[in-house]
Length: 371
Image (cartoon, rainbow, N blue to C red; front, side, top):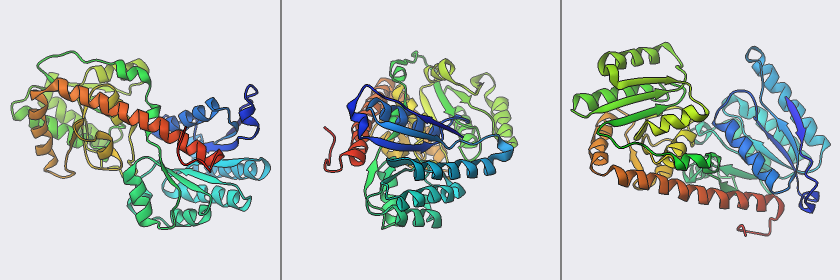
């Protein structure tokens, strides 16, 4: 665990704006880490005097012990330093560790804001989350990723109050909005994730093969590390059927990732992952002018909105939905590209305003909206 402190001396603002900021900032690159880092930068830009606690843990073979140590050290920071708390919530069993930190914060009389990054405890009631909601009730609050998460939280945990929506669009680099795709007769399908069955890789392969058999000129682009042998079997099946119309990119970062979005027209993401909330790859697709075909899981449906793509069913009929969408997309590719990027800019504007509302609730609770 790393403890850092931001010494922002150029703003009087920071003299009375103190915050203990806790979340994963190093280690494995994933959506939660990237979002946590961006939120940290936003608070820094506003001149907040920060005590930062990195709750990432490593190495893997000591991950549970290291995670426990991180959170006990986080409790020590809560007991020792002034300021309210921003806590990037763990998922699944890790919620118990978040509960411990929140309880210590409440004992110290601090305002505790918890940022939800997993949909698992919103989809199915969790004892740890039930207790956490009760602990921070009062002046504490919840940061969620979209309306679906807000509604789910209220339904399962009626005691949850002060819920703020803060979507992840603010995390997507602005250069993605400058990406353009070359026009051609091929429908270029893309899927980027930790390639696995639960993330939908097998369904992507089946859908692309179905589209090929239906007479569509498709090319499938798969990017990301392969997670298991079953997924590799599906990729080998795609190689056998699609032959030259399959490109396997492997893990992509930086410029390679932007090149991936330049190489696709439709992003196919039929995920069934239990923690799926608001995947950055969907927002990156929209920013890149790429239409999205995805399952209605987490906050994806509201991110796509009306016209930036299609929701496909999470069963065998999802293949039909996807193939039917190809016909619509072919009729007006330019329209879908325009709609996708426009939807991203809507989400980005919302995200900026939403963050200011969160900031106001921490430091200026008398303000209901940002100024």
